[in-house]
Structure formats: C-alpha cells, structure tokens
Length: 131
Length: 261
Image (cartoon, rainbow over all chains, first blue to last red; front, top):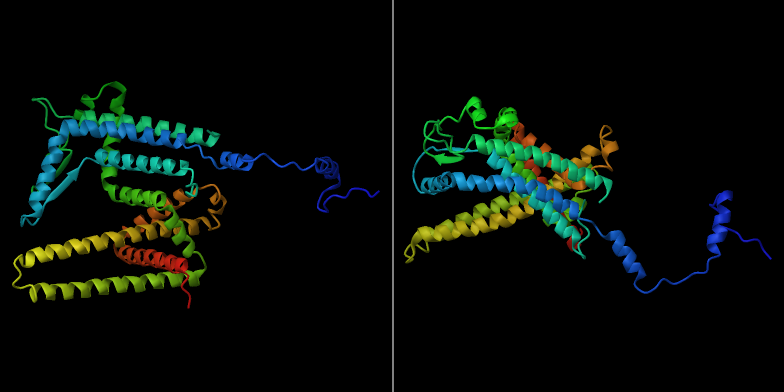
C-alpha cells in the first residue's frame, strides 16, 4: 500500500492538514448554492452611499428652498433681464450670484451623482460600476 | 457597513454639519432687511447696470446672527466668494463624476483604448486631431452650403431666410449636443488616464491601490482645469485635451468594431 502523496508545493507541516481535507469525500452542493454564495459575495451594500447623498443634499435643499421663498423675485428678475438682454442691442451687462447658492446647487448635484451610483450599483445586473 | 463605510459616513456627517452652519449663517446674514437697515445685495443679478449695491459689512452680518455662530460669518464670506469663483471647476467635476457613473461602460471602454506606451498615446492624439479637423471642416462646409442654399434657392420662400436660419441653428445645436456627449465620455477617460499616470510616478505609487478610480479621475479633471486657467498654455492644453478625448473615443469605437489595417 503506497503512502498518500500531497502536492509538491506543500510544506511538510501542511501535509497532515492536506491528508485530512483530501479524505473528505466530494459532495455536490445543493442546486442554487453557488448562485446564493455568489450573490452574497457580489452584493453591494449601498445604504451608506444613500446616507452620504442625503447628508449632503438635505442642508443644500433647505438652503435653496429658503432662497426661493425669500428671494424668488431676484431670480425671476434676473431671468427676465437675461431674456430681455438676449433680444436687445445692449453692449454690456453685469452678472452676480451669491456664492453659497452656487455651492448649494453643486452639492445637490454631487449628492445626485452619489445617489445614482448607489442605485446603479445595487441593480442585480449592473455590478460593473467602477469604484 | 464596513469600518471604512462608517468612517466615510461620519466624515460626511461632520462636513454636512459644518456646511449647514455656513449655509444657515449665509441665509441669516443676507436675509431681506427691515426698514431701518441697509438693503442686502440681491442673491442673483443680471442686467445692464455695471455696479451692484454694496453687500452688508461683516459687522452688520454678525449682528443678525446669534451667539457662537457669529464667528463663522467671516468664514462664510470667504466660502461664498470661493464657491462663486470655483463654479467652473464644480461644473467640470460634476460633469466628470456624472459621466463616470451614468456612462460607466463607455468610459471604461475609452479608458482601455487609450492604454499603452507613448506610441499609443501619440496615435490617440493624432486620431483626435484628425477627427477635430474633420469635424471643423465639415461644419464650416455645411454652413457654407446651407447659407448659399438659404440666400439662393430659398430667396422667394414664403417663410423667409430668418426661419430657415433658425432651423439651421437648431439642427447645428443638436449636432453639437451629440458631439459634446462623446466629448464628455472622452474627457472623463482622459482625466482618469492623467490621474493614473500621476499615480504611477514614484512619489505617489504607494497610494495607487488605495485610491478608487472615480477619485483618480476627479483628480485628473481638477489638474486639467487648473492648467486651462494658465493664460497661454491653457488654450493649447484645452485643444490637446479635446483632441485626445475625441481620439480616445474614436479609437475605442474602432477597437469595438474590430477595424484593422
């Protein structure tokens, strides 16, 4: 009776464990087992991304809502002036916008991008979004 | 959630609290005035007037804010001025990030097409310049033909030249939108390649595996935007980036279609 032989790349102290494990008879996993494992491996928890998006968006949205309520006429007047200037022959015009409004709008955009990434990454068939 | 996710969420929470304080102070400091106070500067203004009404001073703004938040008022002014100046950078970053998310497969394909040594890079750049020249000459010739048609064959048309010109401009704008979409995909891939190239340098190579791809791309986009602000070099860099982005898109398209010489 020949001595069981392990793979040649095993160290001597690893051979015993190899003999034990190789003595276990092969057993076919139940149907669907592999898919279930792969689903767990590939599943991405995106809750934290949605949380980050909400944290960034909510203060900005509240600020913008207050801006619209308090200074909505400024925005309307500026829009009317833009349309008027487009059809007039005025040579020059000046433009000003509150920087915090720019920041709030940009943060809403950033949070929308993060939210879109989370939604796309959580789709069952779309797991190739680059991280 | 993993430990890293928790750290990111807590960091965002801290940033959100700080931003909320700044936005609150900004809203309170620029709120409409009661009768005896000086009027606040309008939040947004566009018009022929060249001088704007002066904004409230920091001291006036501090009087409108309660207690400990008064210390934030100067910081809020600085953040507001910086954000207004950085609107272009914010737009570039937002467009790059949204392209990376919403057109991920296309960006990855273009990124892969632009991999390689200096010969590949030169080929991509050359393809971009060729496509750019082709697009410009085609657009110019199309306008020549169209204007000749409008002023010649349509001289006695019932709706007249202005309507025909508006139709032509609208059609041209639609074509430009499609070209800009392709350019966006190419720009996102170009920024990613630039960030990648920087991370391959000896000084930054240890961060190579730690920084996620979107952050690398956003870093590259920021560098490109900063280079565009340099007076003489900016225009050259912008042309080169546009050419490289278009070349990468075309190269990816050719590889996908399996075109070979």
